[in-house]
Image 1 (tube, rainbow, N blue to C red):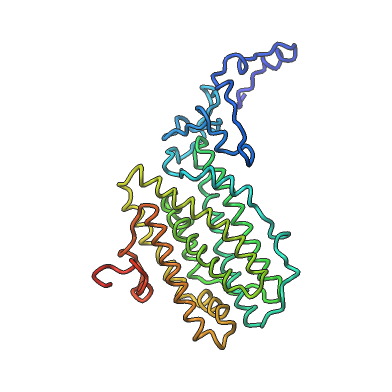
Image 2: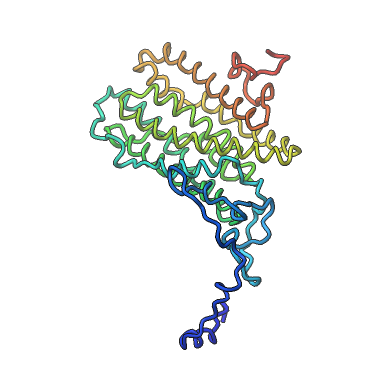
Length: 362
């Protein structure tokens, strides 16, 4: 039969004649006890003995659990990401535990009933920002979902973490969609410029490229927007939304930063590849400050209304510009990829940001 059904064994087991090869002939580490830590039995607690040894290159392409006894005739499942450095980071296990322990509900954990009636301009500004965020957050679910099935099962901890990211981002899309519809404003406008950047991430030809564009660049920028959103929120309800989303987004950015660091530590020669990815992707930063659907609602929220936005909102935009670009440069440097002085951004955007301009221009 196609699946290799052993009809003889069916007959033998029906007579009570067991094989017991799995019991008698195993090579697993019998006697290894994983001891729970203070928070319970964590992934780090079970990374002991050979079970904690993640190969630099997976010896086979199966879903057999790492450390198990594997039949010699298991099928090849065709994984294309078989090198640990392609997906690994040293903080993976801890980030996974944090992710599963800090899940929250966009239905129950947001005090929707406490939303106050807002000035119509403020409400529309909040809804426009929520529209953009509900749009961009789902790409951070679609991207890992696109690559998960290609990652070798020997790197299961990386796959598990990426699964939590998919859930996080689905929840972010949910909460911002709900905010747009919860208080009378409704969904705003979707920009073609935003969609083109999302396409850039989804069309990435490798996990390296997509991770650099999404985790390091895109999600890092969104994390900065979340920080600004918490500060600019018109009510405590939005503050809680941004605060909860921020804790999730920080994990994704921490993974992306440390993944790149792990990657470059093991193969410094690919640094220029990552520079090339970011050369292409930094348009997203320029896009943020040249897209009315992002700039103007943020300015209105910062200033407290349309009338004041042209003056007070401009000052807030300057602060945000410095924050977004400065934090991006720090992430790159922490990952081992120094982007100082080689940003692909218009001069008007990088003026005044430490390390952003080439030395000849500074």
